[in-house]
Image 1 (cartoon, rainbow, N blue to C red):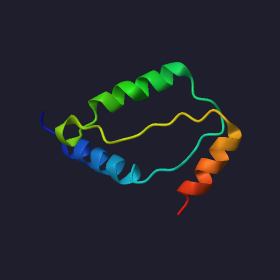
Image 2 (cartoon, rainbow, N blue to C red; image 1 turned 90 degrees about the vertical axis):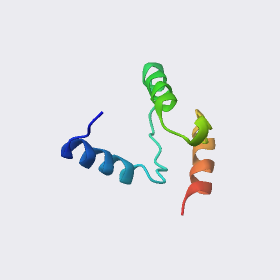
Image 3 (cartoon, rainbow, N blue to C red; image 1 turned 60 degrees about the horizontal axis):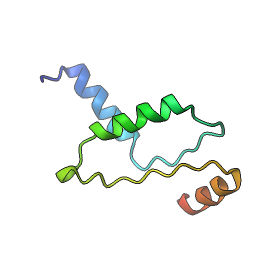
Image 4 (cartoon, rainbow, N blue to C red; image 1 turned 90 degrees about the horizontal axis):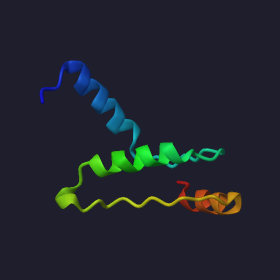
Length: 73
């Protein structure tokens, strides 16, 4: 695959944006969206296919507040 200048610029912008993202949506995310995100995670590169990321689904507003308090800088 050959990246165009535009492709490289877009990828660079995405990689810069995604660093240490700790933003929470106040509304529930639909199951089809979660399924698409999981499929995208399966395609994401990782050394030795180790998949070092952790995904936690938080449905409780109280737990969301507690998690957010712990993850703030």
